[in-house]
Length: 235
Image (cartoon, rainbow, N blue to C red; front, top):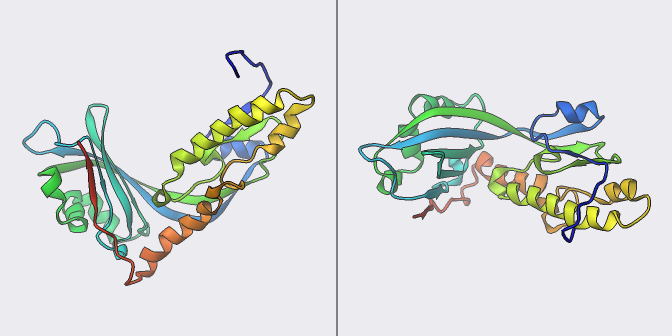
């Protein structure tokens, strides 16, 4: 915007995973894969130490049949948080075991994990299913959906943050900037703006194409698909 303020009438819808506001505007979601991923979050505390020896740690599965996308351990707000994404069914015993005995379950998935982390305790396990969906009826004048408000992608694909940031960058630097220079810009520019989940960008095939494939291998237990069992630490 070259440092000059622009005053336009617009509504930017960033309601994330909650559909109520969009539905009130006639915008509907079509679920492509219900319960596609299990998002698991919990706190991790070192035993006998004040902190871990790393700032961040990413763990990939030992083998595809583990049904795990990845696990990310990172410092946040004075504690250490873990985000873990799996393809486990909501009724699987593995989810119950993770709730009841998270330390044993994690070491069962990553037998060498404690060589990096040392002894640890996991607490406050929270589990939430993530649906894979796309949005229909979103082309409306003055309304924009970005990120997960438009469509979700499997965490294993690794496009979540990039997707929303690209949406916002294109919206600000292309749609607003070009459209505001033309008469009758509102309706035309909103129609020209398409979130990257369905646009011609290189990421078009990822949600839901790559997301579905990411789930396919561990669910089918393909013997040739084995994880590298990598543990990547940032110190």
